[in-house]
Length: 398
Image (tube, rainbow, N blue to C red; front, side):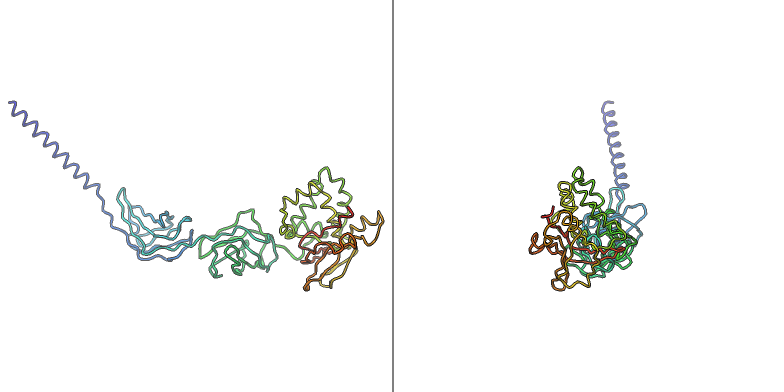
């Protein structure tokens, strides 16, 4: 009896093992999924840019119940559209030249196909700035830029909604463009090689200057011409910038403002636009700090830049012309003195180009630094002549 019971137990165990083994084999048979590999025939473009759309053509690229993934140089691409024979993807922003791989998966099973040869990824074009920060329609300006093509047809650059003319590359980090004729103040945007449209940050606004504005005074002109934003800030903000030292400069500053805010006074004023400040070694912040610490270094410059009672035209200048400034009238007349010390502006011609300089017979025997005359504007009875830097003043008076 004992032997019989023993063999019955052994037999039962064997049967259990056989059943379990059979079950495991059945489970394995269910779990094993064989995926037929997809096939890649070609791509719509063998050379693309990050962000650009690309179409992959082939067969078995997408199947019901399976997941399709595309990798470029190991970076996952966004799948925009898929079918069995084509995939539309967005090239990853971080992709670089390398292999394109299509992967089909279901659970833990997968199969893949690789594009023959490498997919060439062009670097993304970038515009990080511009100089000058304003300009007239039709002018050529410089953009701080990278990764633009040498071929104009490969690049599209817009100011607002208007397309700018691509003039060429000055070097690897500078692109030259011509401002569109119908452009308005706005932001630059661009694309290269049919890539996605990129845009500069909202605060990076390029200003379009006009040859004339519907204003009656020079002070109003400074507030609307984007080429004079810095001087407009200084003129409007001078009393606050000067703080407790304003009273010492008030008499000089008010004299300047009596001209700049007058609609009926005849005078010519030589004022530096933003380029004159931006091209100097001083930053705007440093210049403003200097004004705060020494207001008397700014207000006399305004008065010394004004020639009362004169309508000066650049095209009529031949060199050697000289005029007393409003600063001379302000200082010389009340106090008397040698008229040879008069604070004057005179014109010097060099290579056919007119320059202005502060000049006194004794204060500056050779004259102050030359400032190039850039352009003129007529504003009511006044003439505004833009120069490429502060005209200065004779410090011996102040």
